[in-house]
Length: 468
Image 1 (cartoon, one colour):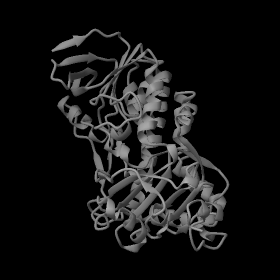
Image 2 (cartoon, rainbow, N blue to C red):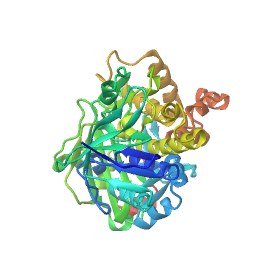
Image 3 (cartoon, one colour):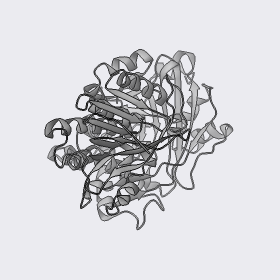
Image 4 (spheres, helix red, strand yellow):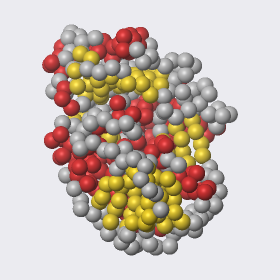
């Protein structure tokens, strides 16, 4: 086993996907050297890679994450626009059937960035790796941590080609390896206790396909989203249609246990037309050209590690992104949480100073804020599906769900409440805004406008896709 000579202020980031690359950007101005260790060989441009199967499904970056991204990487959004990504105003360009009915298309209050995951990752990665302080060590497997229960001093790595084991010494190690993180096992190997963990698994299966939009709709079209209603006592089925670069639509269909979509391309449009609560996505797809086969994924459970509750925590080690908390992708919060966590990582290191006693624990407690907010949003619905969690929903889960359901009903016909709800779902503000007296009173009163009878597509939008 060999050791690499390293400067005293070296940070090693494990994982070269969205969370890891942004963590490297956060540390680039604070460490002398930042090394990103990635198992896959990363492509030069927006191309698929083996270790990111979820890239074949729909993704969005909520405005709370966009703010964090631009704080870390000035010019990143402009680079994304130049590459073809789209900025969509919320809720102006969204046609959404929520659990309690169709939402109106209110004036813009927030926004999302829409792009294929490969394009998003490649664009951000190129900007981060252009910084000479950041090195990429791809095609390299992480074998474990070096150090003791008191302090992590580095990581053991090995080329996937089978070279000798090397030790990368570091003053800070950040695990951003995603759902497959082995951090909990690594910590027990150092002599630390088992971490508390919770899983909520609705048994969701995802099927996604790329389409070329009808010619008149290729310059932009609303997001179309049909959500399940957990009150149905049936499997939850949902669909997303997101307009992305090059005039394409990425369409993701999903269903919980007993209501899963098929991986058969011949059944994709039928599921969208007949199994969702409204057939609008299927009707749109009948007028679009399929470009790919169906990509299918079942690894969608919500899993959270409560590292912040550990009685002891080693110096120089932090966990963030999906390695800390992974969510059902239905809610689209993973990218934004990763960006916000990277900003918090930077801010805590900057405030307390490199190598300060207790620094890693402070980082771990800070990143719980965005991770915990997204966690509550994700499990608030999933916990009610059969078999999702041992023992079923807690009393807290039931009370929270009842109130959120009332808010969602109110938001269908009250623009002010729709904005407050989107403050939270966009991760721009904490859930506390939903407990303000004015919001509580509005929820008690209910919607101010009558329910819509169908999807709020304009006549011009229907014409562009041949539905009028």
